[in-house]
Image (cartoon, rainbow, N blue to C red; front, side, top):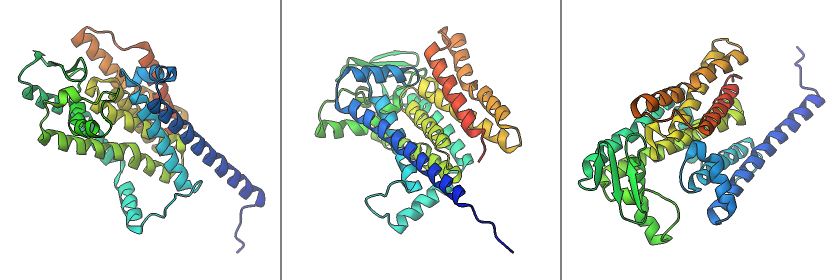
Length: 334
């Protein structure tokens, strides 16, 4: 029997497509990492521009969060380029390390990732409850804790915008930063960290690190290995970063976590619909409808319980854009 082989034109087209994809990955990584490094290392008007651009979904008074987001996406794209073979790492990884990475990628299945996302969302309320019991003085108005003094003018934490997990991170980072680089212009929960015990800070920090590595890198890398789609990979990595960042700074009702949950809901709905035979356009539409549910619930809670505005228009626009992008990417199927 004669076996059909790809023609020379087909092989040339495939190689050309692979080179284009590699260039896109490397270019995206270079832009993200360059802007992140520039923002962190300098103090120019560009810092304010970058901060303002991402503020609707990240919030924050400094450019630290946008810089971290860009660095994260750049590293994820760079890892994809290394996997594709577009660039060679300066060292050959040990076989045991490759085995660990392979097992981690295989273990990060959707059900476990969904459980980890749920635990990440629940982390902030739990930490907030413990922190409230630990604060013996200062202004406490219901669930609101206001601490004054320290390097900053003051810091607050409550269930609607929690800094409890951020305080746990600051408990570990504060002595390291003070003894190495001294004062920095970024906020890391130093003021509230005084009221966080180490028995609480260490487990919380370990969980945050595990969630960040899994949701931000391992699961997106699993998506890339199985689909080869940089679009899917970036949306999964973006959602993972927002979910963990939101758990650290803002909590369950903060913008980053809500936007991350919206993206995850859109990805799950579109992917499930596609696997059940629904066409890409309808699957993407279903993903958008389901993906916007967390944002709608948050707006309802803000209006009914706190008599606040539903949500800033810029935040809604950003969320709709990211939900549509996630739905379109995951409605394509594997």
